[in-house]
Amino acid sequence: MKQPDENLIVDFYNRKWTIEDRRHVELCEDEIARMVAIRSALEAHKPTGLVDVLDYGCGTAWLAAYLPRRFRITGVDISDQAISAATRMFPEHRFVCASVFDDVLSGEQFDAVVSQEVIEHLPTERQEEYIARCRSYLRANGCLVLTTPNKWALINMRRYLGLSLEHLGEQPVENPLTIRQLRRMAEKYFRITRLYTVYDPIAHSGLHRVLYSVKLRRFVPGWCYLPHLLNAKLRIVLIANKRS
Image (cartoon, rainbow, N blue to C red; front, side, top):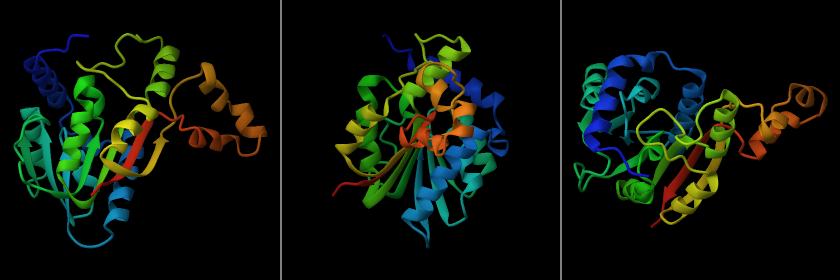
């Protein structure tokens, strides 16, 4: 599939972030689930002291509002509107307007890289390159925390809602990954600590209809834990450490 021109992508995100300028103060349940997972991983990786974090594809950098002050953020995003909003809201942090494939941070390294809902909006042939770039920005044993839609759950949700399965989303580039695909990419560059899913999808067809059955959850002990065990929730969370 032919990818949109980069200028069209920039225009899309500039419009998006103009509309959603202050969205970081009003997180939905999905975003709260991702935020909690990211913050928990970062605090577990480095429980004390100053932590340098690269928010790689940061949008308006709303994550900064939910991290303790000891987390010092550098954010990179392709949208100048997003970077302008992030700089205005979080002047204590540093933000750079650039593509995630630009070498604007050449030579810099961080304790952790956070990638939140980015990799699925990259061309398929460049997704592994993005994972490799995440590794290149990490110090020894640095931590990558990456979230992205679970393709399997996303398809089930969109089918239930009657949405198109030809383009799995509303953004210019939509290339979601399965857990297996993400694991294969990440294992080349990282030691995976945890790979799991969060947030219940809106889906009542196929296997998801069974997994989220109210009756089964009510009458079968432990049934509510199956979506966790089967990694059937909507968002994938990858926590991994840089390979030496």
